[in-house]
Image 1 (cartoon, rainbow, N blue to C red):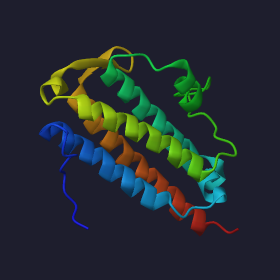
Image 2 (tube, rainbow, N blue to C red; image 1 turned 90 degrees about the vertical axis):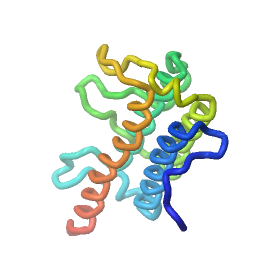
Image 3 (cartoon, helix red, strand yellow; image 1 turned 180 degrees about the horizontal axis):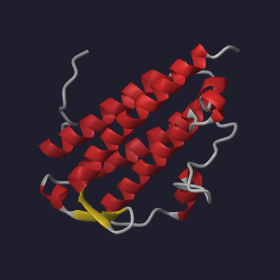
Image 4 (tube, rainbow, N blue to C red; image 1 turned 180 degrees about the vertical axis):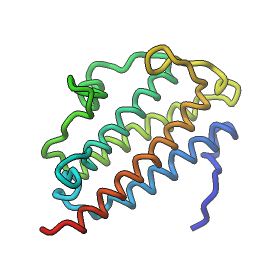
Length: 172
C-alpha cells in the first residue's frame, strides 16, 4: 500500500490533500482500536483518572461534526446534536460513555467522516480561505479547520495508545 496525500479525484487539489490527511488519520485510528475489547475501550486509566477510549472516540466524532457544520455554514441539527453531543458535561468534562460498543462508536465516527467527505467534494480551494467562527468567538479558515480535524485525531491517538499501554500493564 502506498501512502500519499492525494485526495479524491473529484476534489480540488488542496481540499483533496487536506481531506487525505483526515482520512489517513481516521484509518490509523481504526487500526489502533480495531481489536480492543469492551473492557479496554471503557478503561479510564490508573485510578480511573482519565477519559476512556470510548469517551475520546465520541469526542473526536463530535468535534469533527462541529467542523462539518461550520464548513456548511449551518447549525448542527438537533437530532445530530442529540446523537453525538454534548461537547462537555456540566462539570466541564467529556461526557461519560456507557455501554457503547466499539462498532457503534466507529460507525458513528465514520458517518461524520463521510459528511466531511461530502463537504470536501463541494469545496473549492478558494473557499478554504473563508473564515468560520469556532470556540467562543475565535475565527479560523476552513483550511485550518480541516487540518485541525486531522491534527486533533493524532493528538488523541497518543492518549489512546497510552491507555492501551496502561490497560495491559495493570493486573487484572
